[in-house]
Length: 532
Image 1 (cartoon, rainbow, N blue to C red):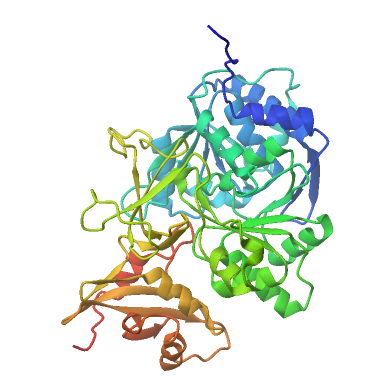
Image 2 (image 1 turned 180 degrees about the vertical axis):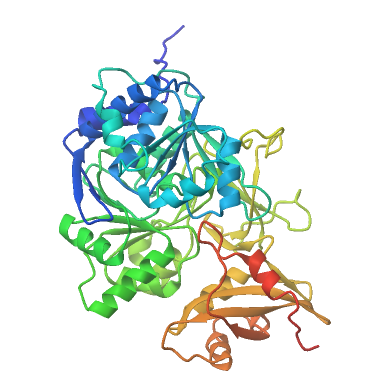
């Protein structure tokens, strides 16, 4: 042997060990629903996580057991992430916005043994407790009225213990998809995949998190691992600001008071913040970076943020990719580009970081890869060390021998590797043999100052097989007509993409994760007739 390097298992708890040792005094703040605040540090988070590890062991919880959380963003929830995996268990974050039948299925399928929850979700607990057949213990994060209080529960321990050891291939976290078709599917993250994903997020061309970062994650901790922020933030020793209710007034006040440098959330977060700022006349907080994902952000929102000097990070990914797979970032010639050219780039969800690969295959011939010419759309596939191989309890892999995972998205890839997601394969509209992107049509419609939300679906047409109609919600107080909206779209999309009809509704149906439910929308307009 000429030499060798040390074997060191990549365990999630090592992220917290590092944060406590190297950044132990870095502050972490929680603003609770009642307006009160609690302050701790990374050293405090680790000590509490060790106490939770002891408390779980006292309950007989150990290796491979699932520990569920039903909670919003706060420091006690953060403690539970590390305490759950610290005992050798599997953290299972549950989305409280899902329907009851999905919540019942998820907890039973996961065979959760412990449930930690916020008291605001007590009605869910009361409704489903009898149906959750495997949950033995309930702990409430912020109240002792209905179940043991989290602080009292871990307060009986001294923290003089160690986190469980084991293989980096052990599972550490379980997240379920939204289940738009059939039952939700569980994605089981490993320690190794999670640590690699966290290290990727630290890259400058990814999230660029470092010890100076002050992060306010609006993305809920129950949604797709909160985009890796609780893991990556520990690796960097970043400061966190949590807000339990994510009220725009609270968010703006915290961002300004604490000098928040990075905020992460879905596009509706930014729309609601701007609506609040425009209504009150307050100054926009001096944040440095905005991370947006979940759905395509309107160009107008990105333009406004960039003109305020905010650095844009638009991410694409899914629960199955841990979740980040691509990220918008500045190319080498960024400073040579005009503002409009820079905006064009930030409107795309970017390129893959090292470790991930993407490709597009022919929609009609999945065995044929399409060219990376920025023009030819295909079914998007992805593979890499933090991409799902097999769903939880599934009998077979979700990928073939070549490991490519079919994302269900339609996309095209530009020659420089930049990704442009145009639709979902099940939502794309095929008219006269040509594809129409419902997502691009919706994004264009959302650029109208009187439109709050828009969704495009295909309707049967006797000549063209399918034609698009646009379903839209007006902003309160704005009287937008169908013809006005079509005229607005005329120079923004191909002429044959123009919707044959525009229908205004009070609201558009959404899934439990907040995405537009095209399935429900198609059901709603099942009998809609277009002229021949």
